[in-house]
Image (cartoon, rainbow, N blue to C red):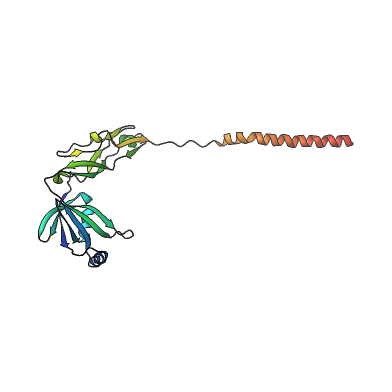
Length: 230
């Protein structure tokens, strides 16, 4: 399984001013403001190329990717912790980067990747319900997986894959409740059948009969009046 450690390099520059006007001027040059912190060092206000950051965010491991950060001739391992985008066009506006110590374990979440088609879906007409889209893990930075594979081909109706049944990976610890359901197969809920047309006709029949009797009685009364006149 691929890990989140990559050979990507992000070039960064120190930025002195950190007010809104300075950020606006910086974006006009094609760079965006960022903050670098972590590893027990003082936070640094820096500028980075948004294209390089987007390349990382769109990679297989996404924001969990550990990359090389070049700043003032120094190299450091870092990852994207948070970012802000322009609502309409999606342009990056700001990113938070964290220095990574490769010899210290990290806690983070990684996506779940469903593999195969469940037997309960293919043969029994059920639905696969994915409950956990991500799982929380603890491991060294070099061991961060890009995702966790979850094979569901063996699942029948009522079967489930739980956290305790996820692939065991050397150096990786799952932090979620072992009994938590990752994915399971359920039946499609059938809708109640519509009332047959015959039933509707039967329901309406008493009113029709009642109306018919009323009309017949009226005709009988009229006939009786005519007979008396004669």
